[in-house]
Length: 447
Image (cartoon, rainbow, N blue to C red; front, side, top):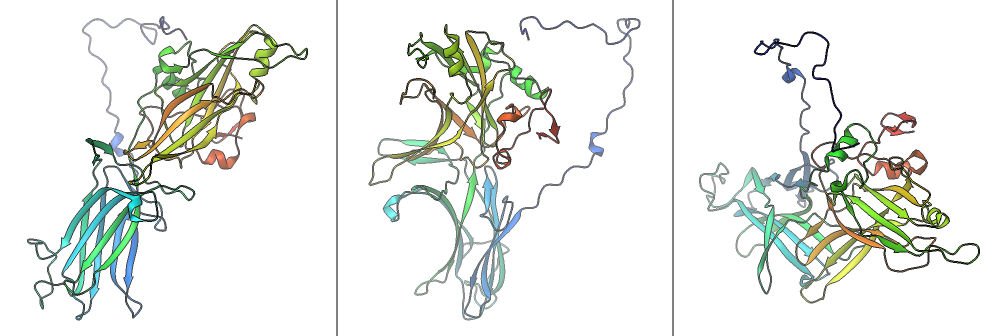
C-alpha cells in the first residue's frame, strides 16, 4: 500500500442530489448503549491463614482478598491495587492481646542467611493498639488496654508504585519488581504479609505470615499505524520497506555461505534482521520478525533461507548481587522463532524475504530493575546452521517484556499451519490467530 498517495473515494456515498449548503441534517436516534448488560466484576478471592490452639480450633485468622484466580494459590495483587483483608480473633479470658500490627515487606533473597537478603519495601500499619483512638475497634469491657473475646479488625494498605534505594554513592528510584519465585533460580524476589499479635512484656508474640504475588503494570507503546491496520483487518504485516518507521532494522550482516559441492566457496551473503517497534512486547503475545537475505549466488541464498537454517532465540538475563558477593548472572533461552517464506514481500532469485515470530509464554517474568536485581531480555540472531560454524551471534537486540497489551488492536499469530506448535505451546499464549486466506479454521484457531 502506497502511504504517500491514499486511495480516492467518491464524495458522496449514494446517488442523488447534492445537499444544499446550510440544509439541516436528518435526525438520528441516539443508540442506547447503556441498555446492554455489563459484565459484573469478578469478586475478590478470599485466602485464609490461621493460628490453631491446642484444642484444634483457630483462635486467630488472617483473611486476605486478592485478584488471584484460586484460593489455593498465593494472594496476588496488581499495581495500584490495595492489600485488603481482616484479622479475626477469638480470644479466651486468659489470653489478652495488647496490639495488632500488619506489616508488608519486599525482599531480594540471594542466600540462605540474613546477609543474603536485601529489603526494599517495609510498610507497617497498626490496626489496633493503645493509640487507635476514634476507631470502632474497641477493646473488651474488662480491660481498656487489651483485647479479649471475638473481634474483626479490617485493614487496607496501599502499595507504592516506586521505592527509593540508597547506595554508597546516591539514592535512586525504582519501580517495584514483579515477584520472582523459580525453583532452579538462586535469587528470589518475595513479598510477605505478616500479622503480629503482641501480648506485652514477658510474653511471646504470635505471628501469621504469608507470601503474596505482586504484578506491576507495564504496557508497550502503540505500534505503527500500518501494523494496527494489519491486525484490525487480518492482513499480512507490512515489512520494513513499506513501513520504515515501524521496524528496527540491523545493519547489513555479512555471512559466509557454505561450500558448494565442488568445495568452492561463493561470495558473501548479506542479511538484515528486523523487529517491530516499539521494542517492547506483551507476555502471552507474539514478537514478529523479518529477515532479508541477499547475494549473487542463488544456491547459497537458498541454503541460508531454508527454515531450519535460521536460528533466532529469545534470551533472558537475570543479574543479582548481595552485600558480601559480587554480581552474578544467569542466561536462559525462553523460546525460538518459527520461520517461513514471506507472503507479503516479493522475493527474487538473489533476494529472499523471510518472516518469523516468537511465541511468548504468559508465565514470562516482566522486565525489571531494582539495582541489585534485574531481569532483561534479548532477541539473538544466531549463526546460520548451514554456514561456517561461528560462536558469536550475528545480532543482539535488547527488548522488554510487559504485562499488559498495548492500546489498540492486539497482535495476532501469522505462522502457517505447517509451522504450528503443539496445542500445549499454543495454549501458553494469549492472542488470537489470524484468519489467512486458504487456511481452514475451527473457531478462532487453525485446525
